[in-house]
Length: 208
Image (cartoon, rainbow, N blue to C red; front, side, top):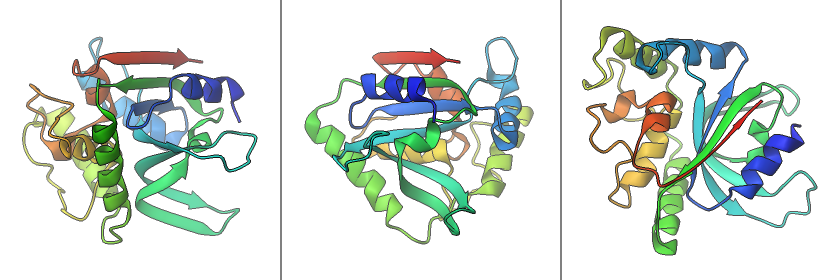
């Protein structure tokens, strides 16, 4: 576990804040490279995954007790477990040595709005029909290359939600679109687009 990264997240913790990470493992690098057409310098993006900070619970664990909401395809050989789609995870899942970049961003929102964001996240997490859309991920990468981000994802499925779409949907539950002013269709939302958003009033970054 990367304790420095965990400390960064804990120092900037607040319910409902958005976290973006950039991993250097194969899938992460694929996503980062695929977003190069929409970065300011046309180089691979730093970002590959995004999620929302949830509750902080006293669970007695030394490695932190912050929980998150995300949409992911999680496969654990050690635990013989496969979780596909919106899920609640522990923040330490993203505090490992594959993470090269991390960012915490947020809006000035009320406690009521915080709870509404987490309520929507929990609602999506509890819908077993919704899966993490591998095909939709490639659809977004294609939309970036074809400059068709404003159009609906060619693999759009109402029962499939990729990580950035999940985050955007949770904020729309309080009447706020974190990509306000962007022509990007919600089904083509990407970590790089969320990072570039000017909607956020709080921003802190960590780089390896």
